[in-house]
Length: 81
Image (cartoon, rainbow, N blue to C red):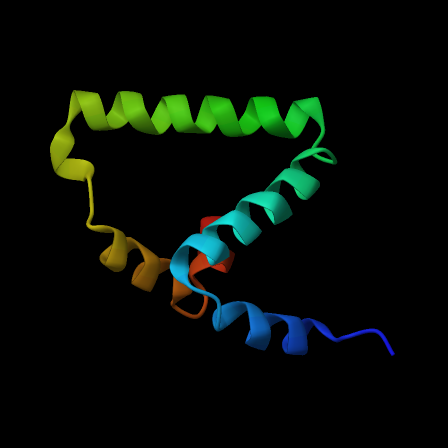
């Protein structure tokens, strides 16, 4: 029987931090191979745009925990479209 995503996740969370980091990187690498050049280019452009905005006005920066909380708010992504 093939293990489910939940079973794999439960086991992975029990690994130490270094092993989890290796696992995450390998999973991301497996996805990266499938990302189109257009998507990759769009992400690079977005990162460059955000960096330029930050360099122009560092006050636009938010602590990571505040930014993640905002993005998890219900309806946030619907309002962004």
